[in-house]
Length: 97
Image (cartoon, rainbow, N blue to C red; front, side):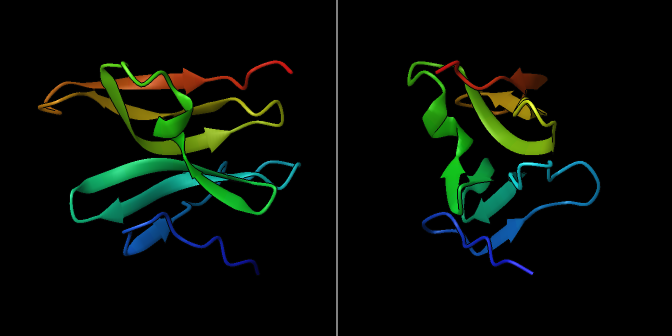
């Protein structure tokens, strides 16, 4: 068992069942704080808010990460900010290095 830690200010970090861990030992899920939920990825033993990895001017807030494959592609749910009353599915792919 491995403690994933939490994002700053969060009181819960949740990695659901099933496809939330890949063969590279990367994990996705969501973290909950006083304002709602935020998608995360845990990679190389570091937890990262997925919203910090998308453009700062994005109109989306990534709420959760539901699954990830061995290529590092992540799918989940997002909402349109600031109201968060419109929801969308997303697929995020890692940048090529």
